[in-house]
Image (cartoon, rainbow, N blue to C red; front, side, top):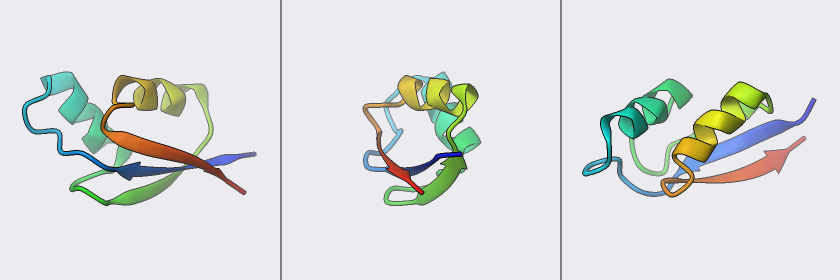
Length: 60
């Protein structure tokens, strides 16, 4: 199954509470943190919520 490499590129400060919580749920604590997650619909939905704060790459 494909995997997603998610990197936080902007701070969550000044954005809505649910967007900051989504960053934490993804495992991103500070700028330039990177996590690798399975490509599942739940993860895609979270990424869509904070698409303006993160960059996403598909990795094998």
